[in-house]
Image (tube, rainbow, N blue to C red; front, top):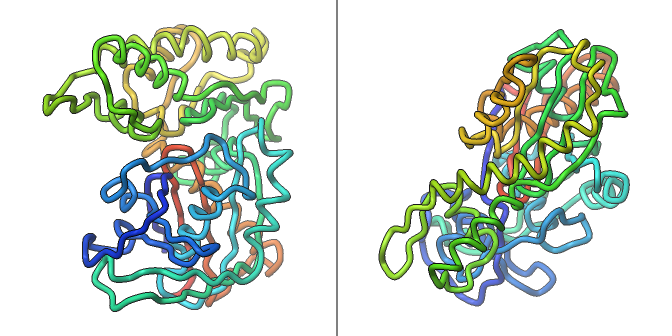
Length: 348
């Protein structure tokens, strides 16, 4: 059985005791007594906090990564005592520096204290989570694994563009692996969000919103300012066009040679940025004569699904192709916008 969980990658320190304010754990995460502080996570931080936030492209040594990772582990347990086999990932640009720290953080036993009253529980409960194995790979490798070994089962060569909030990843994937010359990271969707923020501040005071709050307004296409909806869809389209012209197109021209287009005729778009039709249309306009541009189904799930498949492969290599009962195989994608946890269990 496989299932994915999604929550916003934000947190905020809390000094308030909450009664039931959420319907379930995912919407009511409050971690307590973590380094002697209490924190609201995800939707709980967005709904109850004042300034929910996260650092951009953080490492496992930083508080935001640790809180989001521990929340992900609790979601992965699904209330069981199963051992966990985990795969997580980073963009090309941070992977060499961050991979060891992530392995060290995840591996072993974790005790996490939760205030369950936020979603109707009786009080503080301590959850024990045991990570039996951990692998850390590049984000683009996870996405390629999902495309090749998941529901699409792609057999041909293809280009891939991963449109995240913090980074844009691109590469050419062949049946024998990534063409390393083409692997590259550029600025993410936050480039376009910053353009929109600068533009709207010329007309409105937006109350010192955090970067994550501004990004949510960017996603939905409007701000609420002075109790009025301010539509920013046209402004967003201009910002995304500037982002494509200034960052994405030059990056792809720099890394992809004419000969590469002989090897592949498909471009897969993954990541949350592939949800913006305006951006997808720009890719199709640029490559209409040479590439079939394909948006991965639920593109924001792609990396996590690939990480989960990697966890299964990791376990099969150790257990002679057999998945073990009592073990849960997990992909954790701690993104700058959302965190996605994909879980596979072999238990009936």
